[in-house]
Length: 484
Image (cartoon, rainbow, N blue to C red; front, side):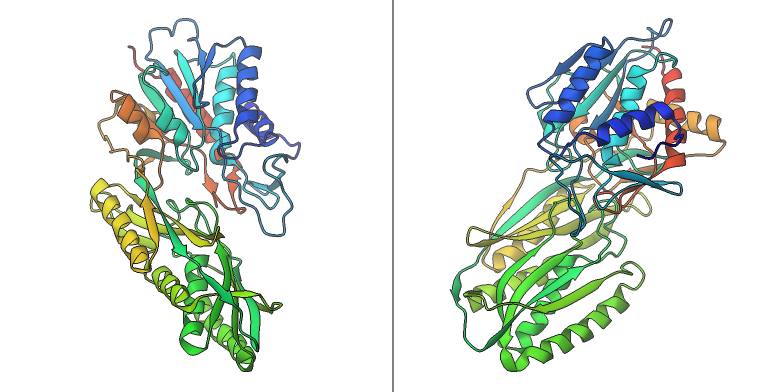
């Protein structure tokens, strides 16, 4: 991070510290050790549970012992995405940050402000000796991004607060009081291979340059899905030529809209130039369709050496038809909250593993029955294609409570500080709050944070001025927590 005067200094200090520590999902050992050492250095009591969640406690400032106890909460892990040309090992290398105007960014990787800025804010509260607050617990959960396993494993009694403030939202000036629930559906397609025919042109077609983004927050922004776009082109080829598929892959994380995908294919040698022409025509069509949302969309076709094997035709066609048929994107909008996506699905990843093609998807909805219906819809498309399909148990949503006391306090605080009304929203992304509410049904919760853009992609960035407003809003809320 560049050495300039970023405000609030203490928050950016801890964010810089966090950026130095590798913290992929399910590999949070280093950041957990840092948190435990931090607690010891500052003479704060802490506890670590079996899942690896860390809770650090701080006593009230003098005279504020009578206030309700507040839990500040964020997650330790970050989404690890990088541009193809970027050399970066997320298990070893620090995040390299830089400043671009009013934005903090990373060099070719995700920034990790989701949720590193939440962690930094908690540490700033814990380390400060000049702020006023009642009793505080800071909860740092593990593996939020790939399964919410830390929140799932949290046991009753681990935290003892009355109010929970989740610091994992991404638009300063907005207060979130609800979120979608979700589940993952995984399909394994048989991928029998046969000897490659002679006299065929082998080529690799690649989709790249897409914006990507969060499969919850960004699902309604008409961004292209690399897996769907690639499959659409392959279907055209399969209906026009004696076409074979050799290899395919695209996307990575279940909660990220895939930005890149590729396939290695074969057609008769006499069709070599035709497939190039077809790609140019296809690319012109989709560039027109996504002219606004995908300005950097690219599709390339390059020659490949002959492969020994190709996928058997019948199974290949069933796979291609299933990917074409399966729903991707927004399915329904909320009837209760204007502009809120109610139900969606994301075709997240396609990978060849152990003689199979494994397809990962995620379904989200603020209504449990609708999420189950969406998962069944996805299952049906895959099962018709001969895949073996599993759907996980999923995680619950967080039902909005417009009568929340902490919501009222947060609204009044924002108006007092900035002379404008904050927006009250629910979010289509999944937050851990729904799981907390299952185990702590009396918790009063709200979620807010500074402004982030492009989360879950290498375009992730944080609006620097919003961090200062977010910090002062949080501190003001802490001084107005009601008595027990």
